[in-house]
Length: 216
Ligand SMILES: CCCCCCCC/C=C\CCCCCCCC(=O)SCCNC(=O)CCNC(=O)[C@H](O)C(C)(C)COP(=O)(O)OP(=O)(O)OC[C@H]1O[C@@H](n2cnc3c(N)ncnc32)[C@H](O)[C@@H]1OP(=O)(O)O
View (tube, rainbow, N blue to C red):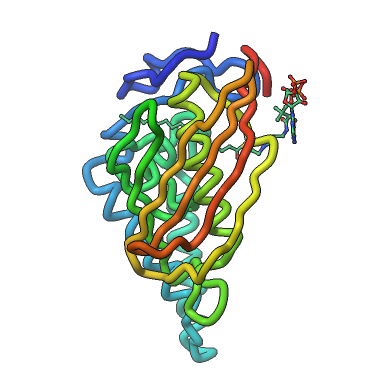
């Protein structure tokens, strides 16, 4: 049975994973410890710098050694996707998922989800503008979020189209809104907008399908 969010801090307390998708959306605020937010921020900053860095060959040698050490350390604490902090820490930008453009939820409910979304240096597409693919990534997650709220269940994206209306700047707090426009059986039609102040940057039109119990 697909239910709403599961309030659980202890991974052992959670329902077992059903089918190919999790049956409950875990809500956690302590996984990864009190400094997990700082850890995530350091990873994002690393990606920002890496995007623009041009190391000398000597520095590349050093960086490779340093990064190897960090990767070896991280490899010792890898766990499964259902219990990792990334994706479940609802107190952090984008639920602690560093692969997503960071957003902070301002409001969510039956009318949809409103967030402040900031594309970083590593989301560069070209000419100081955000990459269109990253904009679609943000819409996919925020569309899935709005769908989850609307149907109180888990859905997958069947299609997602983005109209890029004007340049989306980096390092600028933007306003993203997604909402369910219509629900027909398992079909959840989601709309979204992305604004820089009053200026419309992009619009999204998507269909999410509510998953059947156990459906991957
Ligand atoms: C206090 C704070 C609380 C915070 C709480 C936080 C909550 C946050 C919650 C959540 C946030 C996370 C959000 C993440 C979101 C990410 C989502 C993704 O990226 S998903 C990965 C990409 N998508 C795929 O990989 C799908 C691949 N495709 C499939 O698996 C299937 O095709 C699927 C499931 C989409 C549909 O398959 P079928 O077998 O279940 O259903 P069939 O029968 O084919 O379709 C059902 C209906 O939909 C229509 N349909 C299906 N696909 C369509 C399409 N592409 N275009 C138009 N219609 C389509 C069909 O014609 C049918 O319509 P008729 O019922 O006959 O009217």
